[in-house]
Image (cartoon, rainbow, N blue to C red):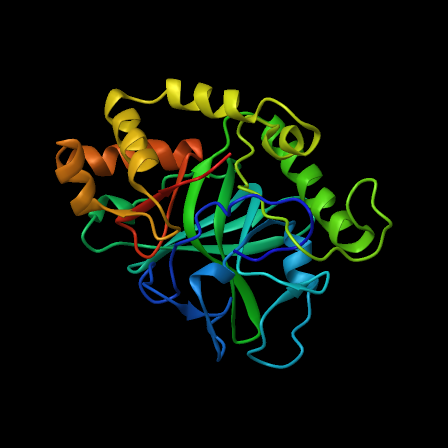
Length: 281
């Protein structure tokens, strides 16, 4: 986890995918596959606008991407689908958030043929978690996870959150002396309820939000969440095999439960797509 200033929060989806197959294990290269290894603890998630991704500069080809002087590993954006291009190995969505447009590539798992069909229609709003990539001087996002936006408040919230974080880095924390922030900011990027970051910043409500989200999940998802809460003691999380043996749920049930918890922003994938950890509130 990358740390910035007095505010601390675990990254959402601190595992995820690389450009080749959608997932990676252990330590990995930086944001766009440049030289130099980044460990798991260097992972962070930052809410951004598309313009921020298009305007940032690389110190040299292959250097890590920086926004406001801080490296970015994973990013989250919210935008409207303007074009959909299905291909054999991936589905490319052209995303527009009002500040710019960028391609988002979601790699298809060959073991899950249903993933080859586009899930999101033109003009639909979606939230994307992923990594900024650069190929032939053109940037795109390699998506780990995409979900539809059901409440338009999330669109407005994301723009506010991206602005807040930018000001945090450039002006310092609220009530601080100003200047670039050092030390601990991470956000879960899950704006579905529209208040997670600001509630935590100003106090109260975060635990009740977690409880409300869990209450809308199936019994299997709640059982998986409870097992993770009682078992996971590190950022590496708990693997599918241990979950099936520990909960008595089938592999299919665990995968379904994981999808529910991911959609609610309650867990994230870690070293691979079959290992999950709790997103602490």
